[in-house]
Image (cartoon, rainbow over all chains, first blue to last red; front, side, top):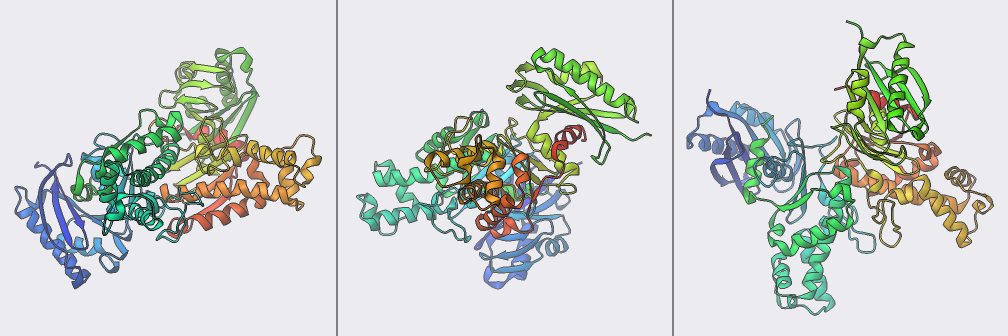
Length: 315
Length: 315
């Protein structure tokens, strides 16, 4: 019998990325095209079907080998039912994605949110390969998360497990309101948005910093300034690392993962971010819960979403 | 074929409780006797074997029906290996409990820590019956915890999952050092010990409180005084409830359980404790992560340990 293949779709607001993974989670062939989100969900779903058919027909595999198709989608969804409740990025409300695509493609279709599939991708064939229990953070505009238990995404009761960006770890005196409506969420500090906010606050306050010369501060500017020795930028990164480390110390006694994986744009800052995170994690975590636990960068980069989406039909 | 039965052993420092559960987790027959911990581990393990044989022979069941024997033990252990690393309550170090008891009894033996088995007991046939994902707190001298995922105890990488008493939720300004060596652990505030400490501090400070007339304050005195309207006692209970509610808000976005179950002596205070916990949980938890989630008292009381221990061999 010929090898099974798994198709993954990373559905973004502007681009649809598709890919074929082999049984080891290695990305063998890819195809991408525009989303055309402005044309509505029927149009986008037809595009997805087209791209997936093209992906497979242009590859060295055949359609019969496709064991299933998975999609990573930004937004709120009923995962078992494969139903999008709301995706602000796509402008979708109440779209039965699984049902529509299964009819179009006549293959099993599974969906999950983008942070969860990125976590599954890293766990399958990235920085968590071979490790059954990992926690992944995606540090971007917000802070996304995914918890992998026994090599599968852990969803919880209503699919809210792994919403690590909404752990309220910032104490009242420093806390600001999060987009979710609650106070002190991790992502108010440790996301690109949080870092930029702290930088703009420092400049407005008149702190002595090279950031004052930057027209529109990006997270990368803060890391670059910190690497050049800017004290204010170092302090901002220290805050971002502090609350990441504190959230990991909590996770260590709650789910005791073997490895933490950090991906997303902010994680590319490298050691200047990872070192203080590791230091704070060691400082705040119970000895037995940090034993043999490590904190590592993601490995798959932008492919994590496609690989993880492909992995949704693994079991 | 005759019905399977499950034997549970709740091994305490002074008493060994044993019981037989049927396949539904109902406690059908019990027996208990002294531990005799002062005579060392060989003696205690022989006692356990005696008690278990007597338990079954005095019941309406026979030895062939015993599907397995489980033990809940206070201390640190290698759960898969069934090996006690250290139990301060029993005075044990490096005792291969599983191996010794399997040789004595010729049945499968499984062990876990006392907070985890209490959680499994409640999940099997107590306040969590029929609910696959629950989190249990045991509020006693310390704060124990157990996380049940798909009706099984979730251990994590090194068995440190569910150590809820060591979630660092108390902010720096109020934090004191925990017995574990870290600062601000939940159990420094929300255990009986924490409540008594806050009460003694208030009396020493000269706060106006009826607790000043109590010779040796117990947690129950604080709850009784609060019920009688003592402001200081109400404030202390509010602190205990605040940090329990904050820990639950964190757990809601990390593992999104369907139900929180609170057991242990402190939980018997009833609504005066549960109502502020529920209020704080609602206040601090993301809407989607608190949807249809409830917070309820444990139902099995002191039987939870025996029932949960029996359940260790269920799967």
